[in-house]
Image (cartoon, rainbow, N blue to C red; front, side, top):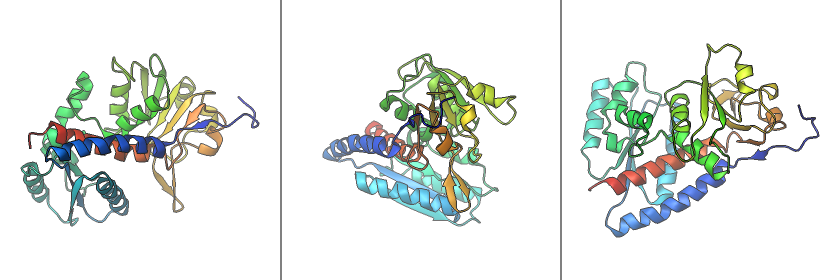
Length: 293
């Protein structure tokens, strides 16, 4: 293990890379507007979850900066599943809207799977509809990919991290990050072709798996779970975690210590988060480009 005098790892700046992508999208939005089409995105938020308010606010701000028209529907916690499905049906039929995002979490009495399945696949810019999930598994690029793992793929590609033949360990098996992340990186194609292992709460000796990783992606939701002695020298470490500890946001990686070992590492905040929003905007612009409206 390198001494504490070893140079610190290179920071993968998610904000800077997201800004590049948003700059590219600005010209695509401009082209759409020349054709008389303005991309439209609807946000649906149920309840007053503090984090959800912040996330939707950031997405609204980015839409405004890009020239994407957005509208936000805020419903009370008492909203029934039937009422939410009725709103989604209405938004599906609105030709002004090319994308629909239902902000998680939803109240416990509402089935997230039913809600995500109700959004038309061609407006599912979150990439959660079973049709888009199926296309991802089949390697069909015509579907929408979930924004966070898609953003990680872009982070790696634009940071010149080679995935071809790489040993990738994904910590976490969730439907939003872990599973789609593994599916993307093991595909036969550009910015993929990796050998991927998913580790989770039932994995025996997670540390031994992590020490094999050329690329380690932490998405377990456990504050500072990944310690320096779990990281192979010069590995690339991507921290997806968002955990609130003593009023502060910390990731799933012990950044201060792991930075001394890793070759490249994402900060938190400022790493994966901005990329998630950039990919949402990219999906929305593509949905508008694909639309006949």
